[in-house]
Image (tube, rainbow, N blue to C red):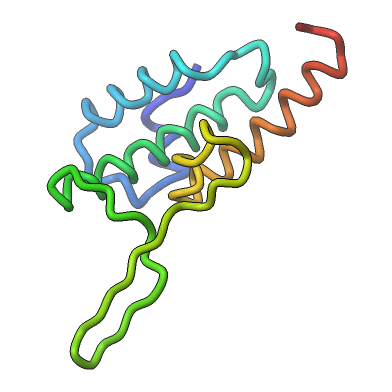
Length: 123
């Protein structure tokens, strides 16, 4: 079972967040990851998904809940920032995961584990 202490040990960048808030997102992500399908990678999948969700929600909160997309270019002189759409490869349901490195790692783990799960005939 995934735990706050292990999560923070892996993702020290979230240590400033309240433990109760991180635990809330851990619980949400635990309910979204199938332990049987992920097998030994279950906890790490939950941790990466949690890091992704925390990052996305932090960015949405910083922007008043508006998702402007990924920064595709920026300039310093006369300040200029351009936003683009997230990478849509991998299916419409996976678009959100491409917004963060954590989400992309979660997708890689999921792809590897689900293929192994199906190949082993454990549907």
